[in-house]
Image (cartoon, rainbow, N blue to C red; front, side, top):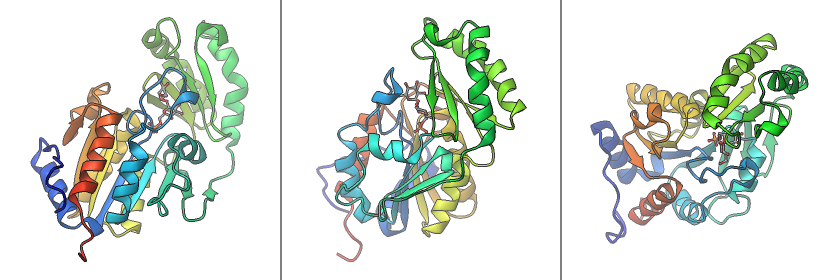
Length: 287
Ligand SMILES: O=P(O)(O)OC[C@H]1O[C@H](O[C@H]2O[C@H](CO)[C@@H](O)[C@H](O)[C@H]2O)[C@H](O)[C@@H](O)[C@@H]1O
């Protein structure tokens, strides 16, 4: 253990306390995996203005050299999260991995390269039909809805800036699900966003593969939204296989996630504090 001046929050569950204890005892066997929007970055009305909380990169830079592996797992394209996070070239983050599009893409800090599947034909077809579907529902461009282009690999409809964000979200869910299904896509619902994307991968699949690849024995996962439920389920599965885990929830906006967390934090500032506090408690095991 390192600096006693730092104080770590106590998880509310026994499994979470075991996960934290294992992380502190054997950091070289711990993987840290973090969602981006809502977890490392405050939610803002314009998704293009999202940036990591200023405490995030310094905390990760201090923590990453002390643990087995650090990854960001996000619905964003990987290169977008890297830019908005300010991760490229940050000292200490030479081995950071960003898994974008729910795990379909991968960026490695070590190479600066992104590996990604080919753009999806279903996404192209959906994108072409989307304006008409939104117009039909009174949710066209002048209604405050906003279409996020996601590199040809997904498309997202945001309702946060609509006159009634929640009502617009609810009204669009069925027609966008129908549109997605006609083109072999799924709808990924999030915080006032409906994303139409190819099936076959989710944050749970991505997290489980990553944890196994780095040989971790414990995993801390932090998220804030419905898309993070799959990662929580993956941690439950890994626990059943003998690993330990700590499930962190950033904010209470999504009760389905908050009620399953071992540790509830107030938002990205508190997540950054936790990461920094962990770094303050850890020392390389060879010391
Ligand atoms: O997996 P994540 O890293 O959490 O990404 C999920 C989606 O996040 C973004 O949308 C959310 O954040 C926006 C900026 O704060 C906010 O305006 C929006 O209401 C939120 O839903 C992003 O735009 C999506 O592409 C991501 O899939």
